[in-house]
Image (cartoon, rainbow, N blue to C red):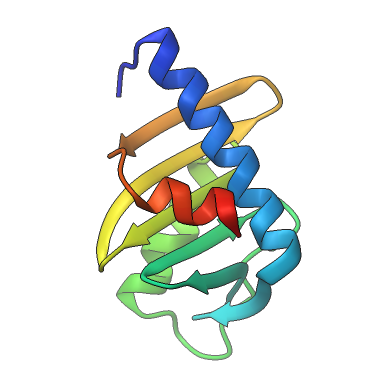
Length: 118
């Protein structure tokens, strides 16, 4: 997704506020063999992935979803990922590593204020 410089800066601000909120309110969860930090604040749900939470090896033959997740991880060159849903709709999907960032989707809204206040 191509963003203006102003919107890109806003995404970075949201990312920083979200990571801070996760440090205070987040917990690690096992999500189908992959650990991720999650938190729910009101109607906002956050999932944060780092290069340190690799998918576990499957105990049996992998199902289709697990195979897709592993394929995505192997192809991924960005170590960090952040997915945010507000009222059950995805509002942010970004990946980054160092100073590189890929924004798959971003929908500004009131959810940003909820994260900033957390």
